[in-house]
Length: 60
Image (tube, rainbow, N blue to C red):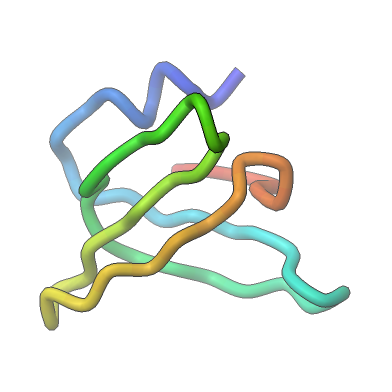
């Protein structure tokens, strides 16, 4: 399971599928909302992306 990787403060890369397309996001975990099952990632430009946990295919 990839939830253990989301607790680290290190930079990570998330590969996820949205609208049938594979996309990649690189950054640090900003917030993890388990109630709404959403991951918020902040990239190097301080922009925050939201990714549904069900869309995530791989984290490294």
